[in-house]
Length: 68
Image (cartoon, rainbow, N blue to C red; front, side, top):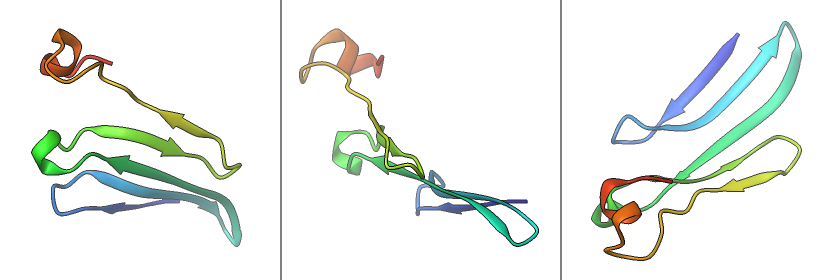
């Protein structure tokens, strides 16, 4: 079973996978604030591995179009 939590924008903020009584850990999703597009900025896995997402410098083409 997968359980998901969402923020006020409907974006996934936490996800938990379990089978019976075994929990396989949570994944946490972090987003920028609404003034900066509320874009995904990082994922944190159950093993504490963190993946950061960057969009380039402010007003850079990658930033403007939301390309990673």
